[in-house]
Amino acid sequence: MIIPMSNIRNLLRTFTWTRTVACLVASCAAAICWPMNGMAQYCPSSADTSNYRWSFEEAEFIYTGTAWSQTDVATGVESWDNVQTSVYLEPYYGAFTDIIIDDDDTVPDTLAVTQRYNYGNGAYGQSPCWNHPSTYCGNLCFGNSNLYYANIHFDPSNMAGSAYGWASIWGVSDPTAESYVVRMVAAHEAGHFMGLDDIESQSCSNPSYAQQYGTIMNVDDQFYCQMFFGASSCDGSSVPREFSDWNLYPNNPCNECNENLNCSN
Ligand SMILES: [Zn+2]
Image (cartoon, rainbow, N blue to C red; front, side, top):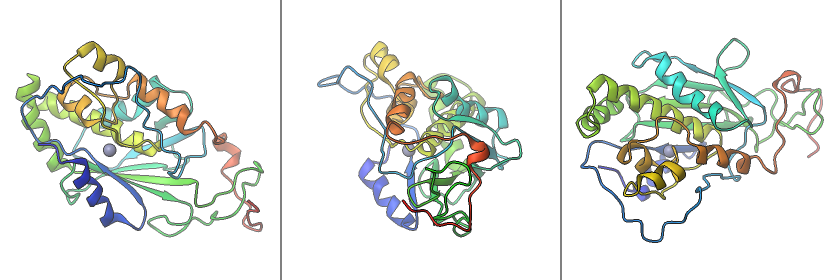
């Protein structure tokens, strides 16, 4: 079953210390094709500019868990690089851990949850850069509207359970279904890192429609339509909407802050 969005939103209230996005409850159910009535013929936008927004042209991710293959996790996250050019997502190479992905079997009733932090409210305290300007990029203030980093918590038990349920519907082996689920969940949660919201919009009843207008930010497209294992072209079009009135800066040297100055904006 899919937990109704209203219930998922209730779950969010347990994470009020930060803006948290929960999603993706997909244990197995019969494949359902939604009616096409009233479906708009364009890409749905999942952009939400009220979220904290990322400030840099690249972000590094790391998967510290052991339940899943590094390759599957990376394939899901890096699928964003195939569809948009605003923010380049790349494996951690030692500079910054911007997206920390771990295994956490305590995630309630969902496959994964993304917790996003601004510079003032990180899980380990506020950043020393909080409310200080970039040393070299004068318009950049490391304030509350700027995304500092995000934690993506996978729930391996729930993900495996979901994969085992969907395997027979998808007509693939359990390990293959697990691989699909890992890639889908990694891509979906990375979309939340980008500032995108969950959306509901799609139909599997018309495969060509779903292929053209589907999105990884919609659980129905992923699981019921079984067609997206990564970010779609529609997802790619949501990213520039997210950052259209926002400055993205090169990581280096803009990430350095001047702790002797406070932001004036
Ligand atoms: Zn979600």
